[in-house]
Amino acid sequence: MADDLELNRRSPVRRLTGVRLVATGSYVPERVVTNADLAALGFDADWIVQRTGILERRFAPPEMATSDVATEAARRCMEAADVKPADIDLVILGTFTADMPVPASACRVQDNLGICAAAFDVQAACAGFMYSLVTAAQYVVAGTSQLALVIGADCNSRAINPNDKKTYPLFGDGGGAVLLSRGTEEQGLLGYTLGSDGAGRDLLCRPMGGSRIPPSEEAMARGDQYLFMNGRPVFKWAVRLLDDTVHAVLDRAGLAISDIDLFVMHQANKRILDAAAEAMDIDPDRIAINVDRYGNTSAGSIPLALDEAHRAGRVGPGSRLCLSGFGAGLAWGTAVWQW
Image 1 (cartoon, one colour):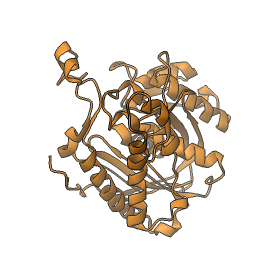
Image 2 (cartoon, rainbow, N blue to C red):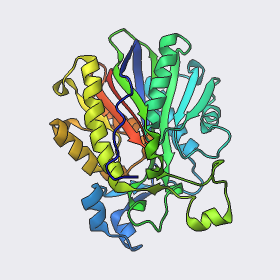
Image 3 (tube, rainbow, N blue to C red):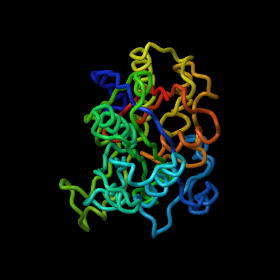
């Protein structure tokens, strides 16, 4: 795969309104892993900061799985909205670190919360929350869901190779959730695009565990159970993708960069966010940043950052948000959301 991966620009940009964001919630495990902690294990703390902007991340304890992180984020979201389990009729969980291959971790979340509803996982890696958000919005607009619980959560610490000095420091564990209900025609997705380019599938992948490379001693000896990333082409692709898709959804919504109250982008790497901000002339103060404290939490990063911004009073009803998730697949989802 060449370093200069061509961006697939064929994905359509659509509008889907009539959806209200009811509440947000988030959760991160208590254990903080600092760069100094990693330096004691032989990692270069200065390299981590210079290349990623990450100062620390959270790792879940051995007894905690992705469904537990998702459950707590969802519970906090439900408490913020003062809704009961019986009020929710759909549960969608975006994750690539499911508790196990079968069943969907969303089913465990549904049971943990005492919800009686359809529940399923969406696997689009770091774009998983955006795919889940759009899917849930379609259910709400179609009238087949009255109150949808949408979660993004990952326990990346279970998927990363402790011997990979360039990848291991990038990731952390965490999750966030939102509730969606029917809204006005001015609320919801003023413009959104979902896409994928499978030509880049091997740039960011976890090879073992599926039908192509089942678990085996040979595969484990190669390290195929761990996440692999070819960082340079992914970095270049992500910056181009943000510039391209953000402008595309803004054009669809009839808005300009200056009309957006907050840009909530996937927290993969602060250098990616800085490069995208420079390319699009976005005031850094209007970009949500928490990658320095949590690292890359994959599908959890957007709802986690959104909840933090909401609790800090930076956004709320009436705000215009630009959301963008991107990662393995290569898959992406970018949207303008009117709260």
